[in-house]
Length: 377
Image (cartoon, rainbow, N blue to C red; front, side):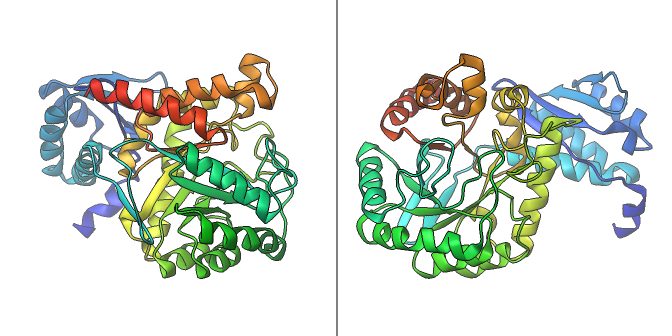
């Protein structure tokens, strides 16, 4: 098998549900010397083949059964062996999965319903609620409200990641975070997530009982982060970002938006698993607003089902974000309806966790959207 590897160029496939029965599979076809054979086999087994304008990529449309048969044929051909294996993996990941997270004493069955992550920023400068919850008493009061309103997870952020934000030291982040975290762990019977990309901050929080790490960098900014998470055996949310918060909105450009996001997330998953993080403890987040234009954000929400190929639960955060403000021409405090619409679309496209500011109102949106989705299955 190893002797075949030099003949095979790396492949990234996207397998997404376009209807309850039809799937799409996009292949960088020029990477394969036997591209004509791939076309012929696909057509033989009833899949529709469309070569894109660049002629570099081919789009195959068919049922899972057709793709499975195609994968078996490809495995028999030396130069297509790896391609067949990749297609098989994509088929496996497209099947519905039962995602369950054990967060200390809390069990989250992420596949049964959409879970709500309430945002609690302990920063002076976050774009929406900066300065509101820097004191432990204020933060506790807000966390109690979110608990009563239907939150499943509380996500604490002690450093702003708004566009243009400057980084702070780990020491400053810890000094903001720990007093509030200690109070919440004592009084709030929910899993507590820590929004940080610094391993030193993660370790300090996990050491006193935090349950989840939410890393906007996808484990890329700090080389020690994956190992710290693995050591404490907690779930992690891996997010896609282009650049850093300081520069991410300076003309973000993609050649193939979803392909690049999925490749980034797949590489981060491999990084996580190679460090010892259990595969079933990883979720992915496409990073709405983190190095994306308005059009990019709308495309991502429309095509969220393509993340199925990664085989992980999906989290999304659209709450009050600027793309909603641009569409509606509204300030941050008037973006509830826009947030609700974006979340409803995201849930129908396969999201498992929504990260929100307005827990009470968004929990109602989630319940209605879940009911509609479940009735259609």
